[in-house]
Image 1 (cartoon, each protein chain N blue to C red):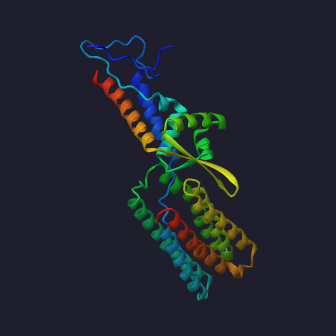
Image 2 (cartoon, rainbow over the protein chains, first blue to last red):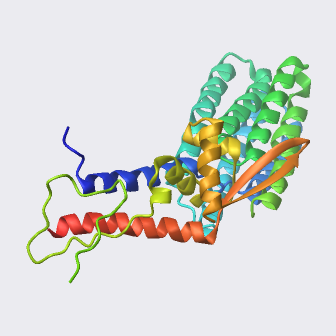
Image 3 (tube, rainbow over the protein chains, first blue to last red):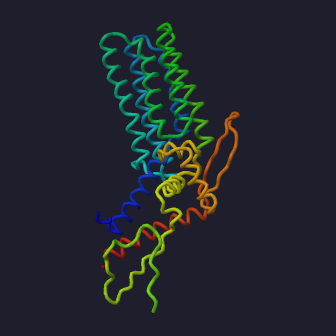
Length: 193
Length: 123
């Protein structure tokens, strides 16, 4: 059998080193302060949504909060990535963002469907559950705190679905507000901001 | 002038390849310690992380406990990696990190591989 030429083996070894380093890298640009800020806006949204009179208004408040939270999250992530000199489009970061997308997409579709069916009271549980699923799948490429946060969101979602509908806003405040603020501070303290 | 001693590493010239006239094949000596695939994997993974536990390395490299232990020990003996043993909630935890010497060795090794490729292109 012909031996593999020397430069081919050298190139193969360089590829192996690069692949191993990429697989071993964990995405650490999850912004703790950004997550905490998202939690703070969620608490405000929860307070405002309690003042609404119709389910459309309630939904409008939470959809506006979702847009605000995404904006804060993306901005904070880009800021932390710049500070830690992490490429947001590198292997681990790309895998993290791609893992978040399917559960969040499913949540958006279910929101539309349930709103049409007049089943808005199911939304808090579904949002918490699917947001938790998104964070758990993304957390597999990130630090342990993110994974734990996702699992707790899923538990809250399951509890919300099993609880009376009138508790929905309280669950949202506890999850998107309290849990995110606590997780955000934990990430910031342990993983540099 | 004496010819460069042939390398002992497995990245040898292919059989039958002859050096060009007037050009000695001065390919760099490869660090055989990290040239071995498993050890190269350990060093590369640790280069991308401050520390990795035994189980994280095992999962990443898809190897057995025994295999990882043997190769990690070789790297530790060479001073390329440092090992810390501790307890986390009463469970033993072995963590590895790349030493400055290990990082230099990986950089040197990468430089050598690039030199091999450059050498081939220059012919």
